[in-house]
Length: 592
Image 1 (cartoon, rainbow, N blue to C red):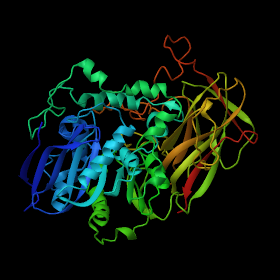
Image 2 (image 1 turned 60 degrees about the vertical axis):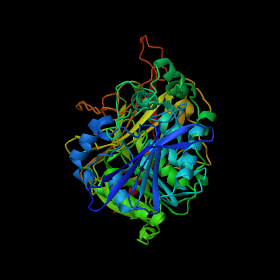
Image 3 (image 1 turned 180 degrees about the horizontal axis):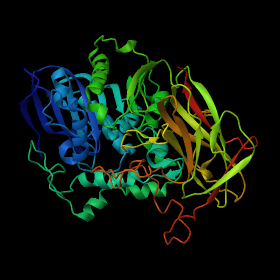
Image 4 (image 1 turned 90 degrees about the vertical axis):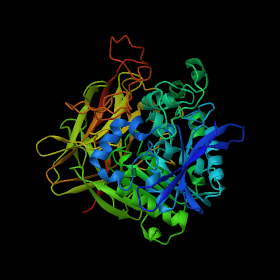
């Protein structure tokens, strides 16, 4: 398998792009990974934008993810400005929009995926070492200026946190677009509850392009070669050449050494970074960008938060211009005013799903008026002070209970992290709590929002398994409780326990006359009466929580009489409120 070079015209006048297909990069154990290199045809020294990941560098976005592509270009035609889209690839930069501006784009198929052979083991120390060595390789090529920036969405963002903590000598900047930084809390277990997303993702988006998997016969339209290599493997060989990712996650149900290998020491990151998260990314594409920004050791770092689908703004003019200004400054040394930007760059969300730009000096926002609203089980309301002691009970798999704030008298903004303190008893030795922040109009209709994946997401979500209630006091704040998830503490049936639930960050400007509400239940949020929505790369219908569901029968309680082998029967949960048990939510209200 050898590399070859094509030179093709760019849609931008007077520019040509040279493409080196399947360039070999030899790892320290002798494994040869393969990269495609898109560079200016003119001889010169250029900064590098590199991505390393599993989705097959030769598989066009339009072919691999047709429904996502079609929706994105229909809603945002500027995605294709200046591009024929012939080199579009899932969740990485379009070379036609970067090479003419003096960048080299390098795409590496990760070990065991696409055209790179080897044993497939996601986010492992071996994979991080490979990524590190690919950065060093790119920084030493004849066409480089010595500075390498990392760019990409989701997987291509998540592994940036890991590799940056290893301090590659040529690494100069990170653009981390919607990527988790804590594998246990953000990818596999929310509040200690197993999320089935990673298992389904592995089956649908990774195994299908595992190196040697020739099923489907997909080829690179430019080279005519299989996107998964020239040496097909049979089913047994493929299985032997990869981890059982879903089983690994199920087996490691506490935050143990498995996750320690995959979760970096963020304080070791020192290069400039732009961390871009999504308000609608509850389940994967939100918390990690905020927590990573806060914990990174970099002196020069920025947090940007936006809406829309989680891949969209990476490709729109808004996202490209932001990224280009960032990279131009740190990879080319251009004095373009980037450093004068405040560190917090927000697109504040309105109830009609529109956005307003805001900049700030800190996160959470310095002017935040932290507001505690108490749950009233008798009236089902949220109020400024607790009322008489009472309780309300609900079935863990039932509708739960909703507490509603009085209509706001004036336009009110909520932007920042949030938390719930709940006093709960159960008739079982455990209970799963799902906290959903919601918004309603004067007519009683619910406002939902374009989420990172789901088209009808709620305002915010949080989760906690009661047996994981232990807090780390040193890492916790009132607005962001932190659970170590290193031990299970069963409940005594009937005893009341205090639970602190982290609610992932949110942003919403609520118009006068509208209401905020909080629903406490024992299962995933699902929008009542919602139309069925589906994307080609997910197994489930999108009904409010996207693909980030907690429905593994081996992890979740089952209804009474169910033949499924659940860990326990669904509980009858009592939520206690009042002065003695002041259940409440803490919300970040931003003064007008």
